[in-house]
Length: 164
Image (cartoon, rainbow, N blue to C red; front, side, top):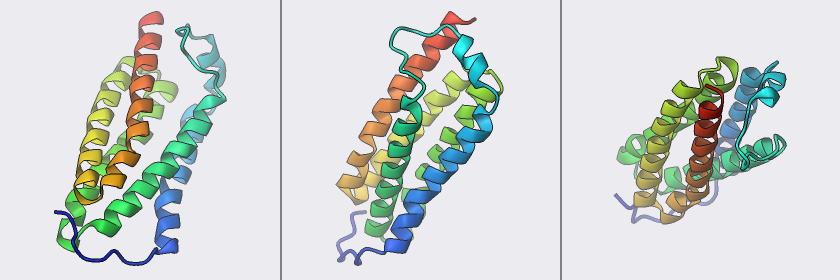
């Protein structure tokens, strides 16, 4: 599936859109799902490895930007008839990513959020696999995201167990 043709010059508008969609989408999702929930979250029992709340927006903004760049690269290196196969897992994982915040924060469904995050990790893995087939750098760019979601899974699990 590797594209053997020359990759087009950088399309700065498309690159900006690919980065801004997850960054802005994540910001809106975070704002909507976390509105009026910070007091409740601060009262939950948390494990010793729980980072301060200020870490999350920095980490997520960075990860959303990198995943948008990875998507741009994968799309640029994909042959037209394969683009759907390469990009669909990305779109699905992004949707799962956004839903998690509502499950965990807004609806207090921490066990459900944990199960959903397992599906999210699987979809990120599939996305990295598909991206890697067309552009190795695109796949590698998702490794920090996979690491962060693994950490978030352990944090979600611990909070769920500590607050049953």
